[in-house]
Length: 145
Image (cartoon, rainbow, N blue to C red):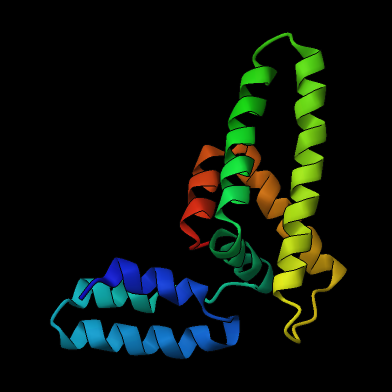
C-alpha cells in the first residue's frame, strides 16, 4: 500500500471527511501489518479550514504556490543584502501574490463553505509563513498542512 500517496489524498479531502477517511486508512494499514505506520496515520490531525484551503491551493494552483516559495527565497536573499529597492519590489510582489492566492482559495471554497475574514487572515498568515520559513514552504508544497 502506498501510504504516502494515501496521506496526500487524505489532505485533499474536505475537513469533515478527513477523520473518517483517516480512520479507514489507519485500519487498512494496521490490517496489512504495519502497526507503526497505522499509529502515525491515526495521529494525523484534521486540518483547520485555513489549512484545508492552503492544501487546496497546492492542488488547484501549484504554479502559484511555486511562485510563492520562489519569491520567499528571493525575499530572504534580499534581506541579507543592502538592496532596498529590490526588497520593496519583492514586497509588492508578495502582497499581490498572497492576495491573489487567498482569492483563489476563496473561489475554491465557494461550494457552500463560508470563509470568514478570520479564516482568510489565517490563510494569509500560513502563506506568509511559507515565505519566511523554508520548512513551512516545504510543508505547503506537499499539500499536507
